[in-house]
Image (cartoon, rainbow over all chains, first blue to last red; front, top):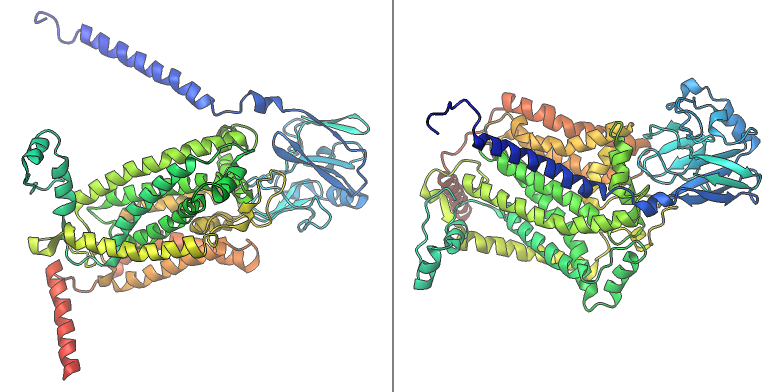
Length: 191
Length: 419
């Protein structure tokens, strides 16, 4: 060993680097399954589509259904509610994005882009406050509907208008609109 | 631990053992003979009380886990099973539930004692930081434990808190769904929380050992805030402080027992006796009392990301407290201005707790904004400036001198009264 140049890599250097590299790759390889096991599993992913019968719903009524463990609000709006939502200038809204998964992600938050059908009667939204995930009040007749006649989240005081758009309070986004469509005149498919 | 050992093995067996594993030596040096300032008051007994609380939670928790079922369909019923069918189940569960509150009560006294006597100052910065780590772990453990009964407050508390992570830009939703194991708080969430709730007390136990180790390197602070200088400033931990701690613990247990036997649910929320319903949020979601100040801070900020950051900052700021306080004087006894600001800060924290329990509207919202602002002003402006402008009172030369002076004054007063 003494006749070797000390600057030359030795067998010890090789073993050190090879073992180190092997260990690092091993840690990553083992860590990923341990992290990924916490992600939604196959049964959670399987519950992605539901069909809802809305034939019993009159104007001014609303129902709540469960989709992917979350409440979905379906509301058949009155003319007054539609007008209140249509009158608003989009530029004055805190969140100008439609948040509608049926449309492109840059659609503006007009009432047309928020409602499901051409008459703008139907509104289908995930009923989860975009602040910290409470279910806003406003589905039942006796509920407080907030300053804008739509929904009000009692947890931290977010007010949503009749198109489910955030108007006041700590939430930053409009209520999400999930993938949804009429598969016939009585049934809406969500997901 | 850095001091020289005074342990002398008494029996042959002790000597044989000492040469192989000096466990008795460690216990002797760190408990029996550990030199402790002679002037510690009852506020210094809460470290011992906290150790007791941790052990109580672990013992009752292990027992509860023998009867509890971590499953979204069965959890709520299994808690009722513990309350009604398991022998002494009601007692064990109430000890555990009330115990969490008592644990926090004791830790708040312990923290505010540290703030009053400047126990976070050099050379005890690491000791203090380890304490903040323990507190943080306690908060996480308590939060996860509160989810396990799977009542309405459990479910919605879990929803609100896990949603805090959704504010992280870009990956927020991915992280939240990873935490949930689904698209909402559900069975998968409950099971992982149970697993982690069982793990974390042992992590706390580990950090507590580091906390005590660090304490035994620097030694106790004391009400005068003057460092130990000579042997007569101290007394051995046993029997002086073992007895003092034990007496204090007994008084603490009277309060503990009162809650368990006379008012076990007063600190909880009635909505948690309704099984979790993902479609209905209770009208009024509030965390347990010990987290209310942070909840008030969260809701005081009119922006989602801002609220989360400021609330996190309220705990994070405690980590750098030793460097924010510019005063070299430890004890508030000799800091006339700090003493006043200390009490204002304490009242401000209690006010935040009250505001956290109220709806975030009108005057309550205004008040929580003022109190939140003041919380940070205390740390970021008051503490750094006070150290520069305040003129401290004369500081005693040593602990012993301070103690003797106190006795002297007392004697003079008595003599005057007699005359």
